[in-house]
Amino acid sequence: MKFDKNKAFPFPVLRPYSDDFVDKEFQTTVDFACDGDSVTFAISYALSSRDILQLIQNQSARFISVISCRDTYFSVAIKSFEPHAEEVFSSNLFRGEVEVRSYIHIERDLEFVSTELHKEFGGNPIHYKKNDIIAQDETAVLYFDRELFKSMTSVFDLVKNDSLSDGAWELKFDQDHVQIQVAPDMKMRIDEARNSNSNKAILINSLYFAAAMQAIEKIKLDDGSYDDYRWATVIRQRAHNLGINISSHDSYIVAERLLRNPLSLLDSLVFSKKGAE
Image (cartoon, rainbow, N blue to C red; front, side, top):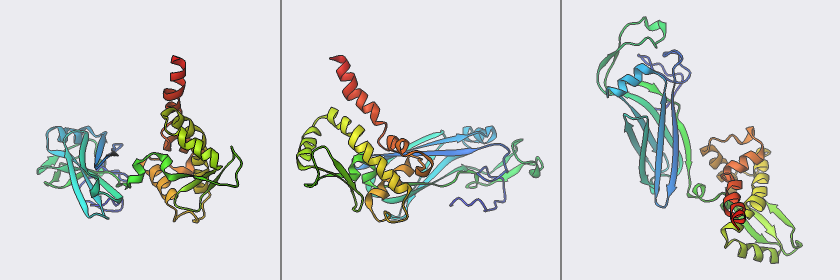
């Protein structure tokens, strides 16, 4: 059952845009991580209704999240009496857009009485049948792509440009990967430097951070000209999965989150090492 704020139920349902339950909330947080050929979904539930929570504790109701992928025709229900659930699946089951629809599901016929209900229900017992829902959250949409689980630097290609002087660099955005163009000798030295983790940290905090900021600026100002390029799709989807609204934040903040706080990497691999010497 997809979330529809205009849908009418014959019984009270705790959900967004509804006042069936007064000042109560049911919210779901979905995280997933890819490790080789497997993907782990971690789902957390936040419920402020004590009366519904009592039903769950009595195992008269439970949390259910339905994970579905249209591109692979895969669908599975994760069920739990606890406010956190975790399942591991083959990564081959997911591609493109993945929806997670979360509910609190009634497990047996019951009479429900609660002071949390809106006064329009008159304080009378509410009859729920098995398989009814008593709470529903908005559908969470995630994007699944193996490139989203690689380092953010995977959207950039370091290429040589014979016309550039040593130390100069340019960015080109008209291909699937953003091109970071440098002089031939500089490319050779950077390629050699990338064999060291500490040098990688320096490159991420300098060259790649600046390139990421500029790519984000391009997306912010985009009139549709970058829609077909892979780098723009990956950045948008990665930001979406992390809950980042690109247009609402300064580009350096978005770049920092997409690159997973690169300054901390520099601190652990470069600054701390120098301090120990």
